[in-house]
Amino acid sequence: MIFKTIFKQIGRYFDVICFTLALFVGDCAAFTFGKGWGLLAVGLTLAIIGWLSEVIAGSKGGD
Image 1 (cartoon, rainbow, N blue to C red):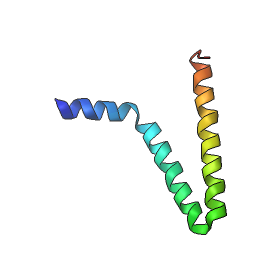
Image 2: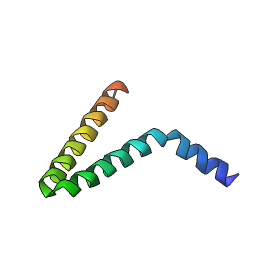
Image 3: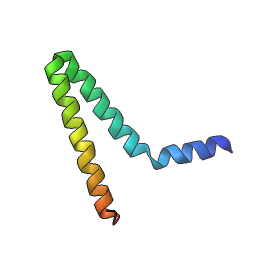
């Protein structure tokens, strides 16, 4: 019963988990090309996450 509950919760947020992991792996890969590229990738990642949070908040009627 506990595993069924845990897997149900993971299933609800599976897309978000995969998206976040993909951004993390992309940032790590960018750092292999150099510190400048890695920092640029982190900045881009933060911008994408910020923009998506605004889009989600706007679609749900948030402030």
